[in-house]
Length: 439
Ligand code: MEV
Image (cartoon, rainbow, N blue to C red):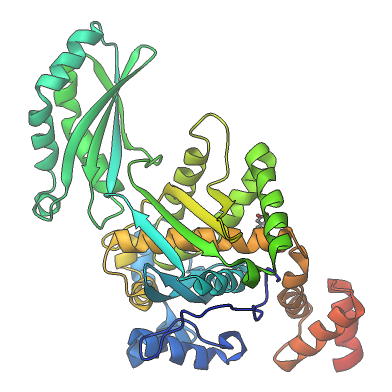
């Protein structure tokens, strides 16, 4: 088993379907880019226009119009792009998905697909997500009587929630809105948490608006001075998780499962290793978050603060053996993403990525993202605890080096292959070979 390239595994059972849409597309990586896109378009019902957006170079292919980009952020000089890959083989809660991943790192997409293929042997991923409850924080200073301030907040809770909800009638009509208030005291300050059900939005905007709107009322009720009013990215009331059973034979046998668990244990004992372990998880998570136009910095902040919630930085995944010796993996973390609103509504390719996924809600997207995080981590640990990850990286890495040395078209494969054969994957060697073979 290798981290990077797709490789056949020894499947003991199959959950591939007949007649249903299947994400199990054999040899997908061997197809030309246009052929891959056609398969994805067939799977997801993309129109010609949507397909063309990915195919064409230049102005037509832009996911966001220059004029929109110019309004999205400040001092715009252009648009910065990333490769978009499709992870295959994912089956989550009984449904097949093709998963768009925007990322610059070699091997991540292949590794996720490979892990999903192994998970598929025993039915794929079972994923869940909690209600989309975000936390807005209001910091209150200079409180003279803590007991009295707390009582006043409790007695006026309904009034505070009503004022918060007056800020977004649409959200309230959809069943969302401010639902509850929690109060904490940290040293001499009071911290009020406004709990807001943001439905299918990421929610930072509405939460911030609500916090700012109720702040004067909070000052009046507590006699204190409000300072910060802002969403918390430790969204620990908006968790998502996934679990999968990885078949021991598909993994390569009992010894491999044991080696895997030995490798995993390292992350439970050491924050230096746990950081890299979680970074690997975020390779997959961020790539889907970016492809769907979501705020990956928020997801990163949430993931790492959640990993440290006990005071000791821990891996976001857990692994153990079931009674038959198969490996069971589980992940849980805050996933504050939206399927409506925000930049994703302006970004045409992000919209098409959501169509490729066929997601109907932020909850479903969070479940997919959690599954990809688990798949990514499983693939990395499987490779690390056996052959290492460099082997899988080699081919695409060599191709990248060839491109850096100026290789074009078929030259890229020729130069990369020569460097792999020689065991010298270096820019200076690529340049020499370019000179030697193409003058
Ligand atoms: C590389 O981007 C990610 C890994 O380092 C993750 C890990 O070590 O678990 C391979």
